[in-house]
Length: 483
Image (tube, rainbow, N blue to C red; front, side, top):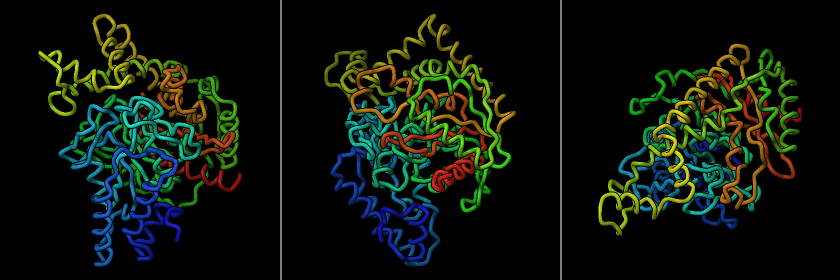
């Protein structure tokens, strides 16, 4: 049996039927990580001992006929900005290279309760600041589909682990596209649910008002199943939505779906933006697939989307500068040995271990919150964010879903983002508005251009993950059947 070729749902089924053991599954994936000849660098910390121990305990449950969790036997990668008790959580930064949390994030508890096997912590851009993992202190993650290309970011390690057969599922975080962009770059399904539907308790924040945990899978069914498990109310998270458990209550992944009667909108603003010609072609082909499945598709105007990118970078850096103030060299993390007073302790601890991109964003964000600049930029961006949200609210009064390309560019060569090019900041322009409005979105593979993958982004209304997943299932089926 070729374990690596099985889907997540197939693995669990074969485990239940005793055709395979949890230990066999876990060892297969661990071996794949350890023999990685391409040096994907998808993991910062591998928890081989913990994974083997969990697998053995799970096999005992199977042997004794005990009820198994929804994630039973599934090898899972965790982005390294999510707290794991007794296992390093570095955030991709030298500052936290030796930090071991004393508690588990709520989502980690859920994964363990559902018998998931955590393999280790995935690489990411430092403090989730970036779009390629090139700002990680631990080096860039390579794309399993094109080894000289980036895997995307900031959740590049999480995406590469699934695409490179080093996990069957993985968890990432998405502040402006950090799940959907690497999913598209690695030919995966990536889901960012509605703001507040997966607990962020124990997730190191970048920009609290936009951060959202998301999931990666090799197909829609696997990703949707994982999402269903993680979406739950958490009293420890003040942003957690109380009725989260009802959103996917009637989810049936075996249901035959089409899009008859579904109204889908394409914002004209998305069509005007600069985008790789091959991606445009795949997107137009994707629209034809949606039409063939019965969807009604029309263009619409959403004029404030144009300001999404600028608005996001003001708000996200402002929030990040505030959030990263906790890394002061006193409570945890790196502490300089070179200081004479408290100011020098703060300054030198951060200067010695924060990377360039983190310093750039902290400096910019601090400036935007200072004096007159706060009113000029930060407060104005909050107002623009409200207008973008209202654009979406008007759109969803008429349409069930919206669509766009996931990214404007194909996976790019390693070294581009580290040069600080403008394309780095433009790479999330299709995904950013979704975070500003707190909406759910999914990216589904939509074909390749010159051997490199592309994705189509489907955007849903708040708490309507059900429609999102059904549309994604239909589209994925249309792609596979050559419609």
